[in-house]
Image 1 (cartoon, each protein chain N blue to C red):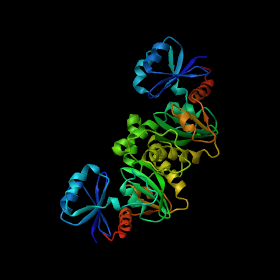
Image 2: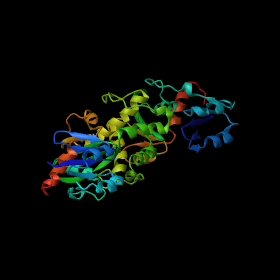
Image 3: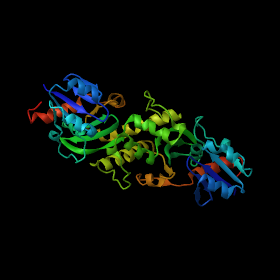
Image 4: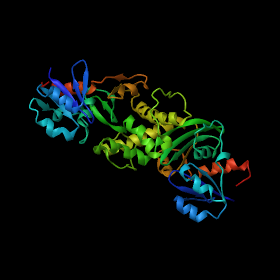
Length: 208
Length: 208
C-alpha cells in the first residue's frame, strides 16, 4: 500500500496501516522524500516546498463529500468520509464537530482548541490564569475559579455535542480526541479516522 | 439614597435607581469624588487611588452569600443576592454563570467573554479570523466557516445554560447580556442586577 499523509496546521501525520506517525514538517520531508506518498494538506505555506518532491502526490482534489461547503478543510472532508453516519470530532489546534447522515454532510461547528481556550482566560485577567483540570467531574457544579474555568470549557463542548449525537455514533480523533472522548458514555476514539476516510475516497480512483 | 458603584475589570458602573451609568475610571472619579458613594470593586490595581477618596466607602466586606467560595468575585456575590432562586449570567469581559437556590450559592462556571472568544480563533489560524455573526440561527447546523465559529460559541454557551435553567428563572446582566438573552425563550435582562443584590446585602446594615 502506498503511504498516506495528512499535513496539518502543526504536524505531519503519516499512516502506516496499524499506526499513525506524527512528525515535524522538516523531519517528515527528510525521512520520506524518496518514497511514493499521497497527501492532503491544510498547511498552504508549505505548498511550494512539497510540490517539488517528485515522489509525492497531492490528492486533495479527490476528496469530496456530498453537502460539503467550498472552504471546508480537506482533512475535515476526509474525516467525514470515514463512516456513513456519525458525529465526527477532530480535537486539535481547533476542535471541529461535523455531522454526517447516510454519507451526506449536514453541517457542523468549530471551537477553539483546548490549549487556546484555556489561554484565552488569562488574556482577560491575571486572576483567571490557570491550567485545564483534566480530572474534573461534570457531575456537580464547581466552586473554585480553576474548576469553574475547566468546567466551562469541557461541559459546554459536551453539552452541545450531546445534543447532536443522540441517535448517531460519536467518533473522536486528533491530539485531544482521546481525552475529550472520556467525557462521553459511548464513543470511539481512532487516531486514523482521517486516513480511513482517505482510503474510501481513493477506492474510486484505485490509487492508493 | 446613597450612590452605589460597581468597579469592574474595564468600567465604572454607577447606579441611579432607574438607570446605570457606565464611565471610565478617570471620569467616574472626577465626576463623583465629592459625593457620598458606596462601592464594590474587582479592579485591585485601583485600590490605592480609590481608598484616598474620603467620601467613598468600600462595602465589599458586607457582601456575602451562603455557599460562596473564598476567591469568588464580589460582583458575582452581589449578583447572586439579587434573587433567591435563579441562574445568573453576567456577560462581560468574561461570562460567569451562577446557580442559586433558596438564597444559597450552588456553584457555577466561567466562559471567556464573546470578544475574547472570537479573537482566539484567529490565534489558531488566519483562516479562522472572523467576526461574530450576531444574527445566527441556532435552528440548523451551519455550513460556512464564519457561521460554524459563531455557532460553536453561542450554541455551546446556550446548551450548557439550558441544562441548568430548566426549572429556574434565568437572569442576564453585563455588556453582552442583552444580546445573549435573545437566544433563550424565557429570560430576564436587567443591567442593574448587581445593584439589586447590593441593596439586599446592605439592608441588614441600613447603610445605603
